[in-house]
Image (cartoon, rainbow over all chains, first blue to last red; front, side, top):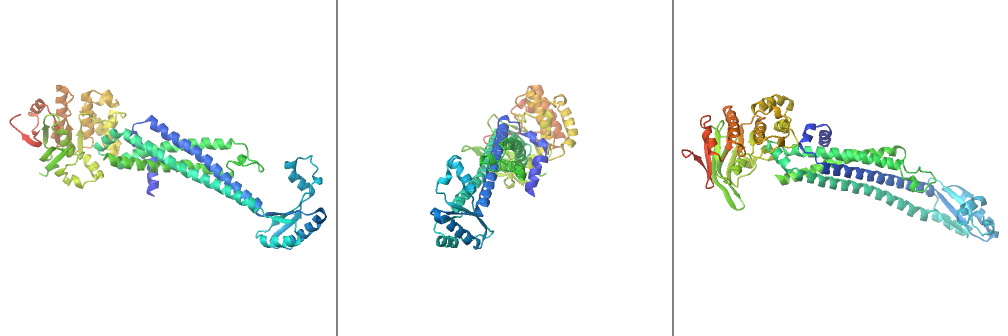
Length: 300
Length: 228
């Protein structure tokens, strides 16, 4: 409650008290610029974090519930082994469906690598069976053993070796994004603290006069806190707006698009950057208060 | 009568050397004291000890009955609202107008400044600065600045007024005018302690006020008398 009251004092308190601190153009611009730059970077870090989150979810969702059985066998045995595999899959608990991919589908898969002109029918292409798992998937190890016994040319690929590093990379990226935001907040706090300390040192004479006429340290600190919090809030608001415009101006994200085209906010996520100015205000409030308390103690 | 400011065996040293030793001083309600002594004798130091800008190294100082060593910074702030201080260099906030500077003690004390505006107008008339209320301090002459500083010192109607060489940079007429303002305050019941090295000014005040003259000599404060 006291924090809310203090922030309330900053935004709605004694406006006249703000005038006791002389306007200092350089630190004012420095604080506003720092807050704006940090808010701008935070918007991008947020966008990166959210996009990687979406990517990790998509990869997990798309890959987690599907598997592929590849059958490489002499042409004479290919059909028989494929049928055997399909039969096994139909009787395996945890499998929703299994179907042999058509020749056209296989061609479509290989086309990006070999081009459309290559006569694929002349190549010894393995058969592919697409498996869709149920919510609780099959016992993969058991299934592998059964397939090896019934169809020696069958290899089960549950995409784990693809999914794990991709999901891990996406999770790491998300973590890095969050860590970047924490670093940005820390750097903002440090820079505002330094700017506030510089302002307090530059206004040593003002502080002496105020003390001489009976001002409490809390009153003096509030005047500085109010000024720096307002500057940081306004700077952060501008930085947030510019950052959001930058994200908005990125190429539209297509479902099949690559990661970069998906960097942005979707739906209610556009609301998340709106918390940046209040957080900047909070950080500036405590940074300046810390700097003011320390400086006033030293000047006592 | 219980003294408002009381120094008992107070001592202060700086850089290893004593400025004062065993100083006794009692400022009672309604008294007027001049503090004299050559430049560098410690007049400013003694006055700073009276409003807790400096702490004694030895002895005790009581202000309004309270030992200054027992005061925290908030207590000191509250005490300073009861002591108006006028410096030789005035110490204004140069980015604020004269009126805003004069109202500053009221503002930092958390008083309703609008209620003090009537006081402000009265004070501005008293120090003859009504026409300069919107001027910035650097735009004022030396005498005007001192009068504005005096107005600021008394806006909260303090019990004690401490003036540290307020006439040091003023011509004779202006110095007398400022002294007369301090004498008026004393006649209103305020306790006044004024530092000056101008003996003529002290002599000129004899007709108007019954003042004690304190002289700093040999790291001690003496009551001056017939030698004036």
